[in-house]
Image 1 (cartoon, each protein chain N blue to C red):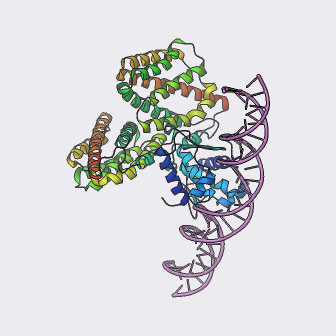
Image 2 (spheres, helix red, strand yellow):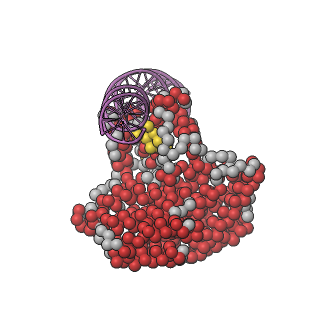
Image 3 (cartoon, rainbow over the protein chains, first blue to last red):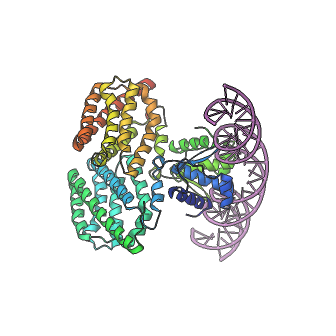
Length: 239
Length: 239
DNA sequence: CAGACCGTATTGGTCAGACCAAGCTTCGTT
DNA sequence: AACGAAGCTTGGTCTGACCAATACGGTCTG
């Protein structure tokens, strides 16, 4: 991310997340930070505004104080994942778990309300995973396209916003791990067929059970990628 | 919300949400806005930063442009609900639907992993709804306390963050509607007993089915409150 | 010695005016 | 009509200043 206030914000975010400043501690004054990072107070103020809206700090006349991470916005997650050389497996797993449930919610709604055209659009996205011989990259892209399409077909605005935000949070970590991922296309193919069938017949039970299985498979794939990454880079523990 | 930049931000947010500026349209320049609202450019810049992080606008050298609401952050919701005299029923309903699913997720995890103390803490919060004769206000407070406690007992950080944010979004609308709410304590009492039992016996199925029923009841209560509010204030259609 | 009180230094909030580089407009050229 | 260059507008950053709210240290009091 370019721009001076973005750089400053990134530094401060990482400092807070790594515990450099601890809970309820006062950050240095805007003037001090400006001097330290050779920036104007205005730029520092913009950075502070960013931290404030991510929910990491609370800024009042008198000083800015570090908040509990449980009071933060969803946007912290990408920064949490950006720590260390390898992203946090547990956190990514949690995100995928939530996304899976949200997909099931969206599916429940879409299979009842969506038009045939909408469902056909999703089926079109599923097809490549059944018929084509995709590269790993293409396959990953295809899987995410399907998930996003299902979410997007929902009329539930909060659901769409949450899901989109979550996808954005994993994006950087995903590309980081990409080279370690090994995909079992055949197992995915079987599930893709079921998914297609459930879309065609508007079979909710089949769709949800299929997506739970896909979710399991995704999880396996990810865990193996993490193991590979750890083995490659070195066994660092990320608390 | 006090503070000049907050006021400016609120005005601009409402202007965008009500369609005063439409998609991809350029907002007036920071200098123009500063003149219009009798503020310095710095204050306007801070307001713009807010809008940018809510995801309503995209600001680049050349101008700030309105983005699609589907690209916004979860925080738009409170502003969406703040439009008009009566909040949007559909939207609140969608939020409650999502929260319900998230609670079921959290429950699934907690009943397996949480300590007896944690579960007992939640049961303590449920008790008043069974035994005590609560006022409407107290009852509402109690219901939300239980929901928040279940969520908080989850080890899933994204889930906690999402839920907390959602609760924050409804908060203002909740207090607005408060005077129109009529609560059927007896029906809640029955469900509260089942909830307590499910917590005591770590019975996931019972807990989830109970919470689905509670969710239904919440929904009924809310819909009636809306009807009352509409009848009271007048039949305005909010698109 | 502990705790309440008060004044001063510090901090964020706002303002004004200035410069630069990246977009946007407009107009002239081909 | 299509294209390109000049000029203008816009956001990004900087400097330096003033105000009001807060924090902090010292003082006074019990």
